Amino acid sequence: MERRIYLVHDDARRHARAAIDGAPVGSVVTIGTNRTSEQNAAQWPLLQAFADQLPWTVNGQTVKMSADEWKDVLTAAFNREHLRIAQGWDGGIVMLGLRTRRFSKVRFSEWLDFLHAAAAERGITVGGSFR
Image (tube, rainbow, N blue to C red):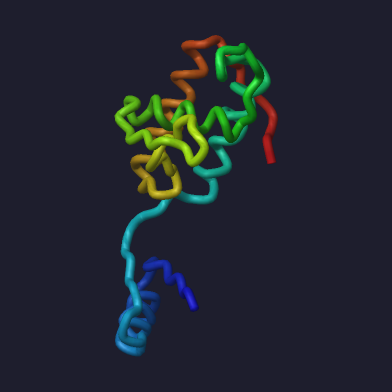
C-alpha cells in the first residue's frame, strides 16, 4: 500500500514519523518536492500547440506528431539531448531516461520556461486547453 503525506504543517510531519515507525521492513521512503498538478497541466497546451502547428521529420517523412511524441522530442532537447539510446527490440532505437515526472518543482518550472521559449522560437502560438 502506498501512502503519500504532504509535509505542509507540523501534524503532517508527526503523521509521517508515525508512518515510518510503523512501516514494515522493506518499505521505501521518498522525500522530495514533486511538480504540482498545475505545473503538469500547464505543459499540455504547449505540447498540443506543437502537435497542431509544427510538422516534424519522423522516419524520413514530414508528419504531424502527437503531443506525447512532442514531449519526447522536447524533453530530449531540454536535457540537451544528453541521453542514452538503446537498440529497439526489433531494430530501431529507444531513448532512455526521459521522464518529466521525476522533475522537482524547480526543474519542472525550468521545463515550462523551455517549452515557452521553444514555442516562441518556432512561431508556435499557444491557446486553449488540452485535456
